Length: 339
Length: 270
Image (cartoon, each protein chain N blue to C red):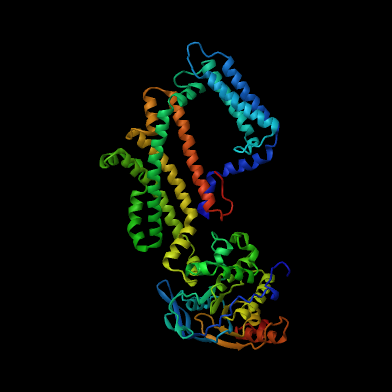
């Protein structure tokens, strides 16, 4: 279980914060303040004219979006409505308030006062404009990125898992693979980039290989260590009960090693994000990484921020998905940390 | 002693089949380990015969090789010399007819109590036709209400009962008990000793128990075997003809205990 505590460290702070939040957030007036702040931000956006030299087409739409959010929060405040999608909306109140202030300030210092230099610091409506006007290209980028990431990640995770189990199970496999793993494993997958783009027939297959490599190393090492640390008493028990080799691997080794495997999958996922973005920037002519590079070439900073935001949401969502899967599969463990 | 859902006599279920115990025979069994390149003898020409349905306890000083003896009987290791057989069949590997219960319950934490108990049946492909058997055995050891619980939710005594159920569900002919009650608190241990006797009487298996507790050996076993310090040899055998159920205050048991303490070289403490 020690390795699992390493994973728990990742979001220990989040857990503690969650615990204290649960206690302090039964104050309905906080939600009311958040609603008021969003409505005020909406008014500020629409009533205060933008800088004379600027032309932000979506200022009105942004104000409508702010007002819509404020209305939802106000409704929640007055009716104490329990939304099906947000059953704990009260817990979000301080964040909602903070975000309203943040957006209000952002709007003020960019579009209204022009305090920050312009193309580098676009106002929120410029991001909204990108998301709406450039939605086709962004959606294509998201799809391309996901296709590459999912293919490479699953390939790497499956191979890493299989190799890790084989290494932990068979002395001969361990003998041959271990030195290779020690030599090649620490090499960052990105170091293979020039070679991979040269050797592989397409940039897509080269990137898939790199992502698989980046994912595979931690998954292999942690699966292997998980298998190696399975208590021999578990095997004794199963053997006296009449288990054969196949049963030992599938029903003893693998379930016992799963907590380690998930740490490897988590680390591999982080690695795969890094390689994905770099591969898209340097070779693949598609995806969010490529979009970032392209936007920078045109000094389209609003596009960059929008793409970064979308990327953050997607990557965070994927990690959430992995944690959900872990919580489901490892429900027998005590004190699992939420992401 | 009220907190334990003890095996009540009223809960006896007729559908628990009574499997005749097996005869275990150890002939001149010797065994040694490698320690820093040198052989370390742990068992020296141990001969032993258990009659079908007998309850035999083995006592000996700490580290004398008792657990090794049990691992040989379970087929988890092979002796350096000598011969072991069960009902005339040589022991050459683990088999579900000889099941060992360790001091540590070693339940699989990722399986529910029910799935842990079902392990042996599942491993041998018998689970589909024997699901009722798992329920019956859980009922027998008083864990019927904990079938869906995970091992971490169980107390020490309940875990050991689950481990016992995991063995009994396979109808072993020989139950090998390696200090199964060693980690329990004394009250739970006393309750479990009684349960063990009643399970043994009902199921009919042969039982081979290793323990450190002379009182436990005298209370449970029909024969007590005393081993020497390493390398272990059989130094004494004490018959215990007292009928079951036994009473802890029985002066005859106290007399036997004194005799066994003498064999262990601890007579002056008694």
